[in-house]
Length: 139
Image (cartoon, rainbow, N blue to C red; front, side, top):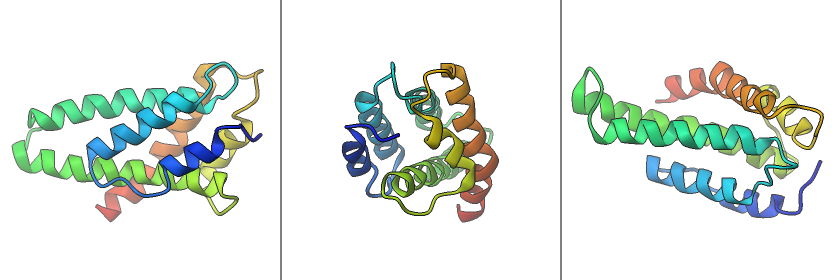
């Protein structure tokens, strides 16, 4: 299903993020566009924004067992990880390639018969089970 604001979402994720602040800005921008009454992607994106804000706070406090070095690693991992979500959105919205793990959520995002939690969990599943390993290796 295509939504009227999909081109605006595509524009927001057209370039990769280069910092946690970039990730937060992109997630907030996408979140502001998504219609929570009709678009299931809203519920993954909202959850991901909340998690990213918590990670950003911990990075700012050097709240990792390895201190500043751990925070620097997590900061880099955070935007590398988020860029895989943004790449999946670019692929979907642009009609290009995307990981199969994202396809179900993106194909069903307009399915009103599904619960919000199902969309959030489908996104978490795609992002953690596929994207996290790729981001760790790349980082």
